[in-house]
Image (cartoon, rainbow, N blue to C red; front, side, top):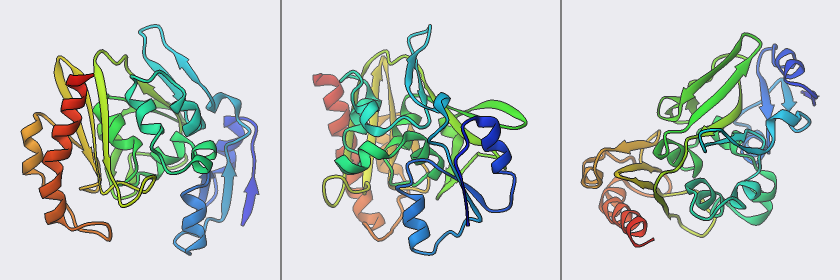
Length: 248
């Protein structure tokens, strides 16, 4: 297996132009999968030396552009009221938050991860680039299924665009132990009309039109919980997130 650490996006695009090449961000998910023999890349393309992939910048409309290689710790240090900051503070454990990146989580698309459901709730968009150019994909279209995204061949997630948060936000997560992946998660933004998304109960985050729609979701069964358990618990988790937005 080759290991390449390009210093520019153009170098990264060239390095990815081989069969079974994989981007390496924080490595928290990919390395674990490699250790289990689930993936065997022919080449790892590290993104750590590419400066334009790091950092958070405020846009003219008040929204945020979050570089794909921005760590969970850096996002957790943002304003308390921001949904993304609330989410980052409950991602895994301190060592992982110091090393893991939002772009790595987004590109991996684990349905039990924290960021996808929050990005769907806030109507975020993924900025992706390749040698062919760049485009933006709405979060609700980006996450397509279990570990499946809308990324095309040779494309890299370069940033996440988060629109201005015009209301209060809350994130509720149910897991076996603190820091674990979610059995269920709920992200809510109260901006006049409630923006609600749920995660952990289906192959991709689900956007709800109304809180009561949580009772209609067809949940899945996996090693963390049964579908019946998820259906029973989800309405209460939604209620708590909505109440937190109101009480804040």
